[in-house]
Length: 152
Image 1 (cartoon, rainbow, N blue to C red):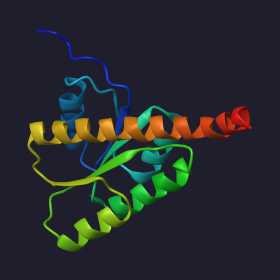
Image 2 (image 1 turned 135 degrees about the vertical axis):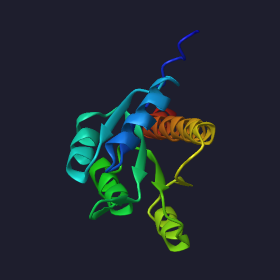
Image 3 (image 1 turned 180 degrees about the vertical axis):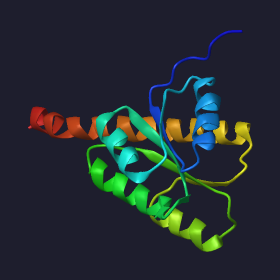
């Protein structure tokens, strides 16, 4: 069987249940993604800071006493304006208010556990395409001042 092509962006998987991070990592690595896993906030932020290739984040809504939505907000602060990433929230709970809150902080998608593997992979591929477009747009925008100067 052919090994899938390697992806451009790495995936940070955050869940307080090590079995969940392990299963997701196996699924994604078998689909060509490079993965970094974390079971708590501090290591997730440290991993995100240490690896600029992380562009996709899958985060559990409830991380023990912590909250995945707050963690996504923290990662956005760490990223600043110069780094883009897309995030997916996973949860074992059914809560409309949490979905709304996740979307308000910029989570691109929200899945209820157990999530169908193909559904998650399709969502990641869609977000990877979106992230590529955001990065390309940013690169084009960086060149605009030089182009304007050349025209002047």
